[in-house]
Length: 165
Image 1 (cartoon, rainbow, N blue to C red):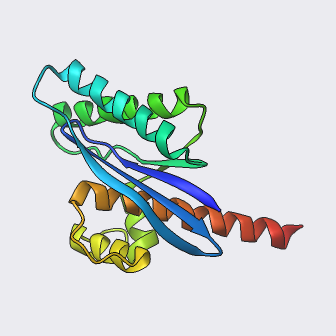
Image 2: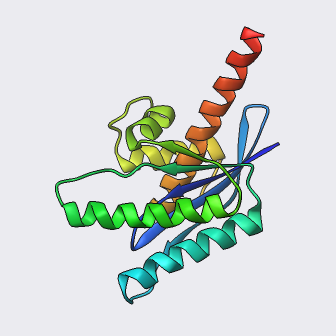
């Protein structure tokens, strides 16, 4: 069995999702949104680091996948997102784990089949693939989508390696 932690970083809301994968099937273990409390920006970044560290220690993933920064027209927002992503990546590296990185379009393409799918389509596919019934918070759904994308990429790489050997 393979356990994957997916992370959708954000300076106010960071989604995390943990899935277990076996024989091409995925099962949801945990998901939530880290909502940073009001405070200085450095304090919020520290909170993201601490929460990701605690999640990695609690769930002990074999792999970690993080969504890459989406650069938009607002440079300040992009920089803040980059800081949040950096805090998450540092927490994972400190836990001794490697980080796989996927662009938002790659995640959408892996789940929905097209890179410009909307959030509702991604959430729907997360629910279908993980057999979930309840409404999932958007950031947590995105984190689960990142984990599922990593599952697809990992399994494909393993199949290709078997064919090559």
